Image (cartoon, rainbow, N blue to C red; front, side, top):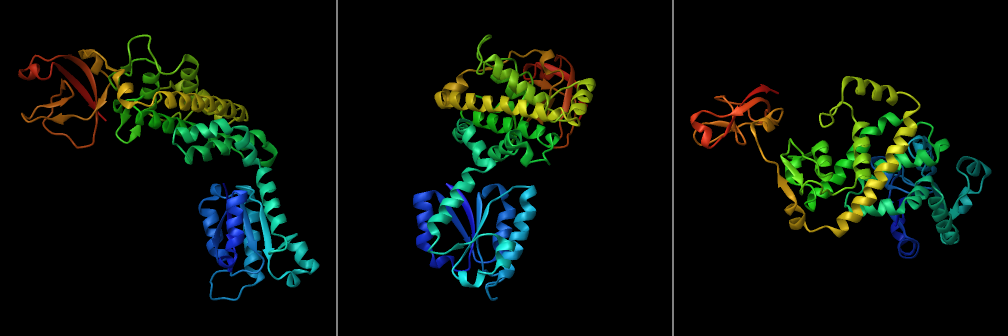
Length: 387
């Protein structure tokens, strides 16, 4: 179903036309009575709209004014300005063709359609314009991937992110303002959505999440059947995993080339300098396109896997706790808790404090066996750095 923004002060008198567009041509006409209301809705969610249908004589800002060409002129001007962001096809219709027959009108606004008489041609032209648009062609080329996003239940945000990269990849001449540096971290956001989808069906346990946030590094380790040390879990027994090697490699590439300043990806200072240098070079265009192809493969693979493994209870059965020792606490970032006896601890590791600011974490270090009275309850003791 295509979304058509429709500005016409008498749209409610054309219900039959609106119904025909929806039922027989998959064109959903969303009406507005004034130019102001319609253009505001357009700019609020530009990615939503596939085309715009304008009444030649419309209300400009208020339904209390007289319909005129003033609103059309403003609407056309704004649509032309928005082409830098998204080139949305627009069409002009009128119920008073005699008033618009001058050559000046055609020079300013182009061809128009007469209501009733030209409805068939109007519908046909709208459909062709949409189907020939860059966005529609991309959605056709990657139909399986966009269907996979639907399976993962991570629309519409991921669709917008990927479309904004795929369109300039296939139609570079139509998007000269494309800046790769703006999109690297967005691919990490797509991974975050994928991991949330995995979490819903138990393929990633809650321990790999950080409250309402997603620890991308821990999630990727878990899916690859490796020790997610900070989360204290792994998937299955050694040798078992959710994702194959090549999907793991794609995910790691996306993480490494994402936001180099994110705490969830540990890069050396040299690695950061190299990646940041690439970000600001023309070569990054090909890198972002390559990474986008990789994440498309991750999306389709995960959607297929989840559709066949969606039993949360069974999936969580494979979540194994890592055996703990004192050293396993070193480097972990945790928020301490106070028990009923006034002893502060991070899980099974005691820390020597008397009070703590809620919400603040500490990084544990020098963990060892606990020799204090609390050792039966907390077998380990650690020093810490405040974060």
